[in-house]
Image (cartoon, rainbow, N blue to C red; front, side):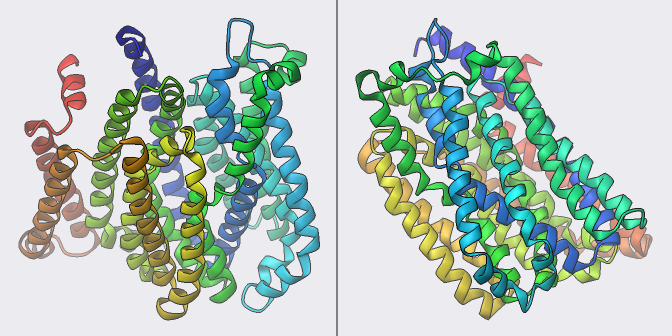
Length: 512
């Protein structure tokens, strides 16, 4: 890639990533208030588990219904885009998921009764609203389809605002109306599902506007171009293959579904709150990953493996740095968090889940770019056995570990499954493509954060008792948490800058 062009592209990536990250964290802030001060106050643990299982089931079904079309859109968009337009690739991106949804809906009808039987004993509340899952699946499916379309056009800010902010605000309204008994549980569930329908419509209109195409051209598929040079065979082969690999990013969803069946919705509700806390760790990758994938796909298409290595290491390093720092802040303040939220004692049992899932999220955030590299390369077929190992290990580990360790077992199943998967994936990347995501800078990050945990332990032993004696009760706990966070994070950030762990970050600060 020419240096000037690369600089322009990286500038777009940086701007869209920053804006997307801001949208993500605004959504996290809204979600934080909603989850910890509204949901925990107004919903029972069983009702929290109901919303979690419904969303996770819909996300899992929608991922299957995509039939790999989102990855296919990103991979083949550079081949379709030219001076004459996009040759109907957006039309294809609508048609393939619709076919997938029809198959998923058919399977839902066929297996409706067996699925109800699985959940009827321990999660009876879910069976009352089981019929709404196909509708929620459709909304989730096309919300993602339209969001992916915007990402290949290098525009992710608005879709991120819709997903991270819009859905949460609408759900907040539903929680408050239900909490103050303005609406019934039935109406609440309809509003909860309807928020995803609203998101789908907003993303659809946004993609239509930024595509610069009239509606007829946007829906039209240039079948001659698709068939030219056997392109359709490559796309069909890739799309069908990716259908078998969609479970990779959805393994954490399986844990809540297993918990709902084996332990009940109340336990799943506790897991949900802990999952939300740990999920904050992964927020930055949603933006950086979305905007980096089209660039990775273009570099792979051009056989520019030096650029693939450079970009992969940069993404991996910065994701490791940011995700570990977020996890660090969460963990050193976890006791204070459970102390301030309504009914916090009911959810304190999820502390182990936060630790285990937090580590899994750090791993996934910093290494998932490797999955994109492999999927966009000619060796993408190797993803299939890797996903097979990941899925099988997740099913086996959830079945075994939930029975042994309850919600901690579900979290451990996710961590161990991802650990095995990434070991195999990174080995494959180096063996076939000579691509490595590792650098010395990552070791520096691990060392800095490890020292940070030691400092936090020393603070808890020496400083916290002094603060508690000076200012007892909740006020003292909050003052201690705030002081600890500011002092230790400033120390860690200063070390990162002084050690020049990321030349990119240092350069950005110098420009300011």
